[in-house]
Image 1 (cartoon, protein in one colour):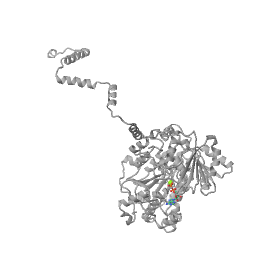
Image 2 (cartoon, protein in one colour):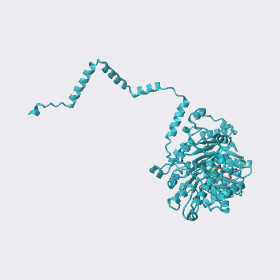
Image 3 (cartoon, protein in one colour):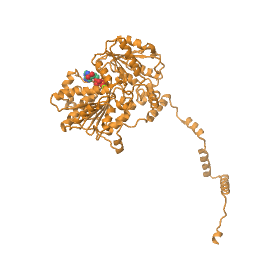
Image 4 (cartoon, helix red, strand yellow):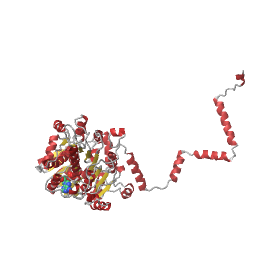
Length: 587
Ligand code: ADP
Ligand code: MG
């Protein structure tokens, strides 16, 4: 009964809502207090539509200049280029292993140099045009003797006519000998190889003396190169210094050349004996490591030569995989003549307290190369090439982008009686090696090649480099012409351009010629230059030219390489990027 007394009649939802609404109206109607007024005002304020808000925001915003707008746009682009992960071992990332201090070596500069005041170091760097970044940078050393290299190494340097270190050697050698991680950027042909080879030998020697290597063990040091030919060349430089050391009674250090395209068994035989130094291309190295034929348990020194090229050619994941095989901290070194800001930042993740040593702008052309650019119609090229070969005595290098063009030119030159050989990634290893060896030993006068031969190869005394076509990426151009004008000698580079080149590529070329104070041909001078804002943007962002490819003729938003890499992900490219017919695994 009681319950029934408390019974409240059921009111349907619609009715309840109507009552609520009425109550509200009622309240509003008599809202005369100040508080209520404020409240309604607030309500009204929150009301304006998004459109109104947007126009209001626009009106209130301070005017930004065109340059500021471009800078902002560029910053956002660089940040959003997140296609590159860090260059670190997955194992170390997963376990959260990071290193904060450089590895210790037993090497120290002589006392007199250690006592150099900071000012003196700075003035030497200034005098040699060396720019350094990093903490506690070891002092530059102006002669090989003070670098405390073993006697037979010094003798060998002298025998090779190497008496005075080049700027990258003056600063790079003390940095690496001290055990520091380093990014080394210097012109093509400026002697970068010795900067990592000499300390590599010292590390191997020191380790071997402390604890001799046993069969199946090793290596202590590793060099990774982007092409088989470059790996072989670097291996030969290493060997050249090891032989006199062995003869002088130092412990035997065994080097191994680990490249694809050659029989793996002979390589395994050397591994079985125990190796001290390995020079490798990524594919074969990855293979040996994955099959557990070799380990990096004792390896404490890693060099990536032409590091930006390795990343560009798509070896990034291979390198990360190689990183996974290291069991402890190692000294990591990166070298190249071209290293755009974006790659430098990305590569830094692999380094511990790194020192950057820069001689000249990254991506600048070697000033010892006279660069000539000529407008040649597509169909006239091959005939004009013959005429062009008369410019200088041999040896001459001819570069083009496609393998088919290499074959055509090779055939044409042979028909015309020119002693020519050719190399590209589609040829088998034997042919490749024959071409390089006969050209290096001056048995052949002309080498026709794709970009396989453009990186790092040191042919003696090339007189003339002909670019049968202008590479789409300016970095490739810098590496190609860098095959001549090496180590103080002068060389000529002739480049054929025509309507097939994109305007951006030609603008990059124009700016590069301007930077190197070369003659600008009328075709390039006439080009409409959209880079008036360049100086202003440079000064704000601190990035000269394109942050992605280093080209001076455009900013990152117009980068052809970025564009190309995006489209490459979708469709295969005809360009001979991989130096082995496009099959990366076997390079
Ligand atoms: P990079 O790697 O910078 O393009 P390399 O290391 O291949 O250049 O060296 C180019 C050439 O210069 C090699 O033939 C090398 O023997 C020679 N060279 C290296 N250092 C010196 C030096 N200090 N003085 C004279 N020649 C040198
Ligand atoms: Mg080199």
